[in-house]
Amino acid sequence: MRIFSRLGPVALGLLVILSVACGDSAAPAVTANTLVRVSGDSQANLTGSALAQPLKVRVNGTDGQPYPGATVTWSVIGGSAVLGSPTALSDSAGGATTTVTLGAAPGAVSIQASVASVTPVTFGAKACAHPVFTLNDTLPGALATTDCRLGGYYTDFFDLNVPAGSQGMVLTMESTGFDTYLELYLRSFALQGFDDDIDYPANTNAQLTAIVAPGDYLIAPSSAELSTIGDYTLSVITQQPALAGCEIVWVTRGVDISDSVTTGDCVDSTSGRYYADVVAMRLEAGTTLKVNHRSTAFDAALFLYNGSGIAVASNNDSANAGTTTNAFISFPVVTSGFYLLFAGTNDTVATGSYDLSIASTTTAAASPRDRGPEVLQMGGLRWPKGRAARSWSHSGT
Image (cartoon, rainbow, N blue to C red; front, side, top):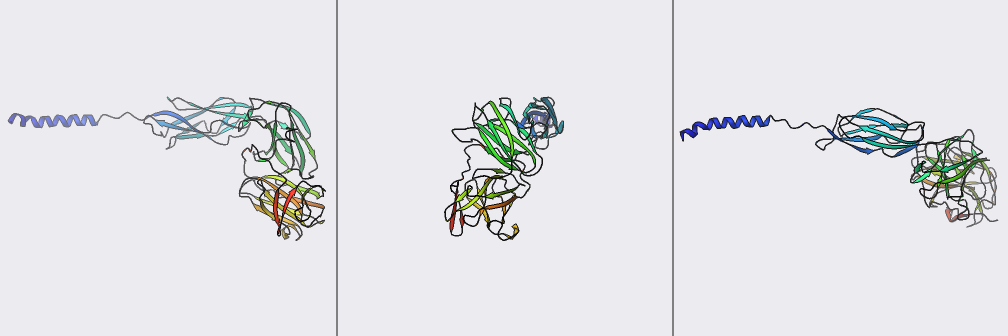
């Protein structure tokens, strides 16, 4: 017993030494281990323009957690582009970003993100050509698999400048090989109008009639079916900024139209005969539409419908329009979409000249591409007038 008691303190000492030695054994240091694409891949824009979203990666460490403080190097490895920053340090969540401005050359662009001793990742983008199109010009074109795709549709783009004044024009896209589809955008990609068929099924070419304010626009010819390619012809012919019959004419903010209500225009015969001209427009949520409708020939009235044919605003007499027999609408847009505006009369069988002014306001930067069975119908639109209701259709005298 004495022997064991004497060895006890020695044994305890050895255990303490061994314990300290084990505690001093350092764990492996955490290092950057993987790169993950987070967002910004597969974007497209016009040559010379910035991609809408920055490119973002996440750096993970050897412990599987986000790794801060890593130097991420960005480089263009294909195509033409300029990076906002060639390097970035990963933040506390492991994230690092850079912005991209596409170069002058159209086509595919590849951008690589890399960290030392880590497998790099690559982002793809596409630069879309947008040659200048001149008013009163006609040119041949072709949709090809090398074109940019919007929502699966191969699309070409052409810059169109309208120098001064409210300009009337007819844009026509024709093809013998496929069903054409034609859109008109502001340069910011805010959609202003579209057309699919001139007269389905007899004529599947596209023809868009518009009255536009001065500025820069994009004409976007494409197809009505996904992944379609083929030859086409595109023309833009100017005409007087006027309305005729009960046909759809697209308008932009900031236009002034001098025209006349006639018996050949849209007609409501619910409780008498009321005539009106009609325009279509794309309105963005968060904006306000202001319209003046003035006439010395008749008592003016304005009626605004959404794309579902539901009345959302109307006015008969307003001092804001200059006199109490003129009409004025100030409509705060809550829902983005297509709208129809009727410039008509408050009196039955009234006709005569008028001036229609749509105020220029700041709109949203861009609108999504609208495709599919979206058709604005002239018939069946109704609104209240006193106790009666109006239903517009194509006129028949």
